Image (cartoon, rainbow over all chains, first blue to last red; front, side, top):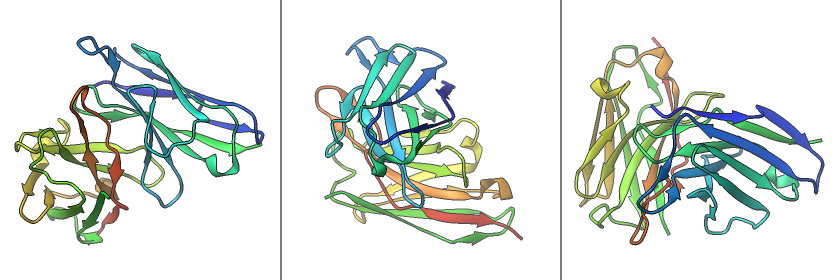
Length: 113
Length: 124
């Protein structure tokens, strides 16, 4: 199985400041035939299902604000919230859909400082 | 607009079999490339992928649970059913079904639409 790890476990950021979450996969999730990394980011608020934010490392899902961005390749990836808003308080998960069994990271909790 | 909704029992006794139904709308599971998956999430923990079925009836299972899972589809009813045998208290979780989309250029990608989930408690 591809193991996903995330850091930090939690972070508190002031409103309007940048939040950065890191994700690492235990093996590459770069599909060489199309040069896409099969990495997604989800946001989950209490009592709600995970919401797809980003897929293929950096493609924002429909309706996702452009303050959310993703980067990385191979085994190391980053989700950046450029200017934290109150509604961004949530748990964020990275997820590899490169190969079954699909796996998720343990999550990073983002709060307001 | 794509929607999915899970249904099934809230309380299951240990050793019983769980049957969950995902009823969806806004897409067809006979469209090339499309899939529907099941993911569960124990309280306070990360999601765990369980199973996936594709438009062509290709099925994938989590290796750690494969012996206990069966996923099927009823295209006419727009439903996907997951059964899990020999339930245990550690299987207590919210169970979600989700749509796996297909891009004609890049292929399948991440689950984009999820149901609201159904909480399943395993207890005697």
